[in-house]
Length: 428
Picture 1 (tube, rainbow, N blue to C red):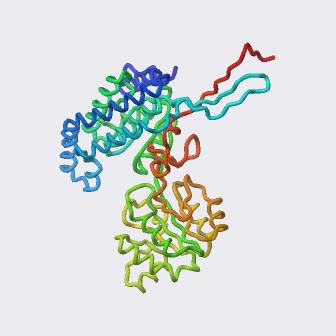
Picture 2 (cartoon, rainbow, N blue to C red):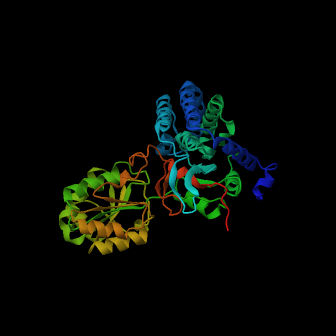
Picture 3 (cartoon, rainbow, N blue to C red):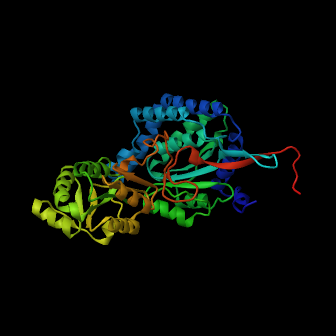
């Protein structure tokens, strides 16, 4: 037994993790019908108790406004009846997705007659640490339930009242469907110490998934003894090749940066081949400026900006490594594709890179030299998303290489077990 499991009497966090582990053992053998029924009960309960959730959310909003929280963060924190209805609709959509549990990944009959199957099974207890978006509480719990996992949810203190109300609704709903209440729990406490205890609950929690800014993610990665799936900060790049269709390149660049700049799959750097810089830079500057984007550029971009009467902020190394999450983009001209690749490999966070080119050989060369979770060819970086990939939903986008990489759908919330069936077989 692990050290964590011996301290449950003195730690509410570890006690919650122990209860989650028991619930996970009950969830694992349940058929899809039972889990789907619980999710439908969750969706119905969210709508039926919408007023109660909105009232709890109002308390969080009042504290946030009193603390001078920026409007963008206030918007992320806000729950309305319409948003709750949309969250309930998302839960009902998850019900329609294929069940990964029990899927045979591969199977064969060995020469000695043993039947070998590798079967998907739930991870067990999944801890999710996230920042002030209470919709994540429902999204994460629903994905965990669908994949047969118990969810331990640790949102930010700014959404504590909202999350408490939401988890209360979720627990009542799963119990009404015959599932254990502790399949969904809010981690007790609002202090950082509760997060530290969760990160030390090795043996009780099977995996931690941090969702949020770079500081949160790196803290969990550095300090956790529980295995972590690192979801990504997104220092994403768009490279415009010498053989690019420049109209297409402008459209992809603006969409990648400005369609929704505050998300991890938004572009943060554009690199342009020197052979098309004279034609492309004025057009790109005009389009980016019209979209409200500030360019942090090298000398070539600054010169183009001066000629166009558009201010370009001089770029520094800090710009190349920054995930802006705002209407800002770093920009440089490179001598060739290999220089673009070298720049990206130095500064990328491993999330998403895009190349715009009509040269299939250049596209293949670019793709083969990237080391990121997703590579786009003549498409916006904004497509790196579980929904847009056709997975139906995601719990995050992994930028690491072990277990899962890229958008994490239901299959990525499972592990595998080998089931070997014999007929009295013994080893000689």
